[in-house]
Image (cartoon, rainbow, N blue to C red):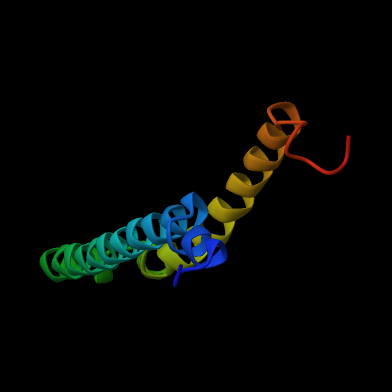
Length: 106
């Protein structure tokens, strides 16, 4: 036989197929997230354009400027917070719902 069992296991392994599927799904999520980020900044620029006089020439100039700066930095601020909370929730779920037969520490 020309094909070894190891080659067949590597070619048709469920783990390899799962990683290909996960990579494809991750790439799809990345593309969608990129377009949503662009949409967010376009909508923010449109909002600033139409409300420029109201925002900049009001008696609360510094408050409005601070809010605009926070809105511009929002995607960069929220991602680490969101990732940290997600990691904590995932850690807690893995403690309670781990499969003891697949773990090495039981």
